[in-house]
Amino acid sequence: MAENNEALSGEVQATPEEEAMLAQAADVAMSIIHNEGKAGDNIAKLVLEDQDVMQGIGIAASTVLLGVEQQMQIPDDMKLALAEIIIDELVSLAISAGALADDELGEEATDQIVSHAYSNYLSTKEAMGQLDTEGLKVAVAEAEQTMPARQSAQQPQQPQQPKGLLQMARGG
Image (cartoon, rainbow, N blue to C red):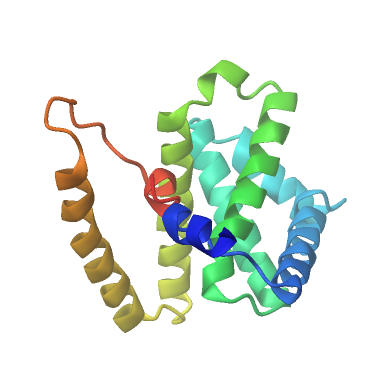
């Protein structure tokens, strides 16, 4: 029955090895974020000194993810989960620092953060010559194929709600 629930929800259970790898990657990310010295200070500046806090959090999240990738190999399918952990931590720090209020963090704000993070991540990977453009084209084509199916599955009397990257990634 669990298999049916996984199929319906679109979620796949992680193996113990994958969970251990994600925990290790999250530990590396937290050490980058909370590092005493230049690295930690730079992450804090990205979040706190950007006029658009959402953009600052997104850029900081992609910077931390790239830093983790330099220290260990992360499977592509695990990067989204790691990015969510990183964003959650950065948002928590921004709230603690008074740069962001709890009530500012709705779906739209989360989508902005994820959009900034994704854009910065891709731009940086491209600048480093590490962007798999063929893989990206395939991912975009797959996303375009699933989008019309999701839109037509909605009830016609409901107004169309814009979907952000995080909501789409979660299958919502």
